[in-house]
Length: 138
Image (tube, rainbow, N blue to C red; front, top):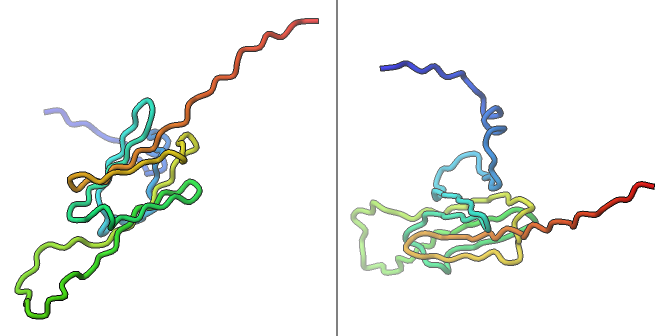
């Protein structure tokens, strides 16, 4: 067995090595739905694992370069004749905000909710190359 020593690094050191176009705004992820973020050549894909909700329960807002996804827990137990003896699962409300970078085309962001996973698609803006210009020497 080989012992490998690691240099103790701060989070500031790690940030310079990791490029993250989606930066979360929550200091603590208590009661937050887990998120996966993927990048392809043409877009970013953000997946939020949130089982037990309906697509109508989600509120997705875009304000400048901040995308916020949230849900609100509703008490739907109006039947007074039912006595809850034990309740082991709950779907707590959550709110997650992400900063998107300037490469995202905000006009065509799309979302879908399938099998407990909310998928947000952030298409990248096409890269426009300026034509090469010849400059003559006088």
